[in-house]
Image (cartoon, rainbow, N blue to C red; front, top):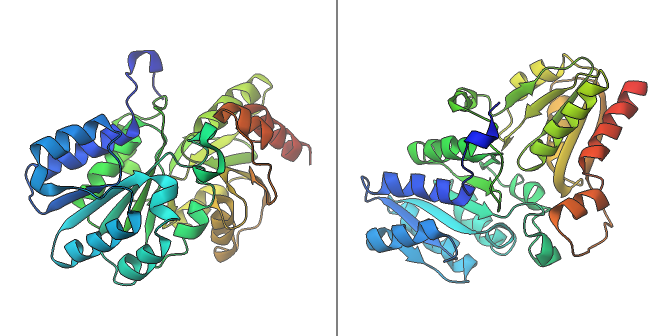
Length: 318
């Protein structure tokens, strides 16, 4: 864990784009296709590497089909857009063009979960894990801070594959040092050890889970925390080894519970025949669609720090 006062916050999107840019300066086969001009890091890329940058405009379906042709011709392609539009809007093209042919195209979605809070449902990305993990052969990664975003981006450049990177819209407090790279094989990090309850989360909500742990520690309760940032492909054997140390599990996600992150973990538990008490925190079917900032929405949907603390206390009492 880091002293965040000494770390300058940087947007995940800028970190990831810069990593791709650095690699592209030495490899002309790397092509970046964007539906957005909003990121400053894009200016440098398109100005200095114009032959390796394509602005597709607001036409994400065409962008995916274009990437498939480039990938078939030997290019390593990165697609960039707001998360709801690079997943839901062009899902058929992703399924039929990228997944069907196992093409090494990386999709980068910015503003996952409730990240575009005041834009409400049109910009929420609360079902992308359910939809995208159903695709054949895809890898899904959701970093929680700038260091994890940097390491994941470097690995994506070095190892072309069909994958989806889920990036937070806003800068996050830094959690990791360089040791994060050691977790790439397993796809998760153990943030803390606990006694009876373990919380599994990822992305922005991981920070609220850590805050909840600090509150619980003052009450004499030690909870384990696992950052399962590789949402697919989950290392079932390794994650089961860690979870088997605990009696109860809580999953925390900014997703609809139907088919989401918690469901993926329950599938892993079933496949490993591991039995334990489970409580899932997320958006329930029939949730109220309202306008408000992210913290307000977390309180409304039962995802705030206090809700996480209450979930732990409930399992501790049973």
